[in-house]
Length: 380
Image (cartoon, rainbow, N blue to C red; front, side):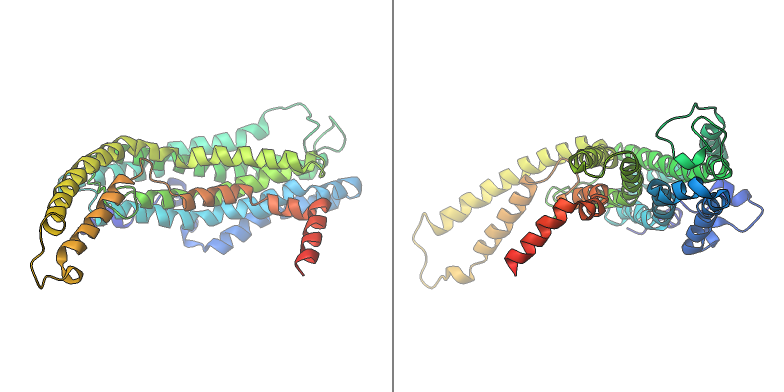
């Protein structure tokens, strides 16, 4: 089935309301590396310059604060780089529903309407204004001095903010909050799209090779959000590293493992909307293929094992054996159909993204290095 023109430009990233109304060039016309570099120059470089201007303990405190560097030099670029990466996979998934004929021609207009509604939500100026307010509000709400805040924000505990502290609260943090909240809103829109699509009658195929009735592509699609998971994991790990002893590796492992489990639940939970249709399709497949397999197997045995074979009939060239094998394969595939369209590779992608920050922690652990050295000596 041909993809309608309205679905060819599906996007949850390009041309938002703020982009269209901006007096300057639209953000999606600026190359991604330039956007990343520009945001790094606006968020991190002034912090460095102002801290060095303060000099003394403030400069040293900023340079030693790994959490801030990771936040603006690693996590923020990852969140921006995720725009094209995730958007391309979401758009491909939207078109695949039509290409694979999961949506029949009768329900295609409704499917197009769902996609248009989601894109209208993406362009909502009210929502984006709310995200901006939510991004800046925490910086202007008076919060008493907290011991675990970066030391370079205040000239002294409980004292006034430094110049770098003002820039951090008024510019740097609102920017990264807005980027993160915008991704949260996109995730809500995508989950809404999946929910509405799951209410359409889908032409699921129990014998589809992906063992998910033809919805296996959704697991791969959801796994693309692992870039966001990696960005969050990097920031959380750096913040924990800044306030916890580096020797407490067990604490890091528990921390990241819990985070990985939460990410798995959040990333793949929208696919639960398809559980009912997958379950019904599996039941239909079990019943239908069981009946066909029983009929075919009974006649196969009657022909080849319950009577004397005619002379000259060679089993090696008989088509019945091939058809029996094909039917057995189809029956096994239908019986193994999953109720949840996520395979192990998609799940591992999210877990790996959540646990990736553990790698530098392992390399920083002296005991781990000693174990590696001993292992290397034993192998060599």
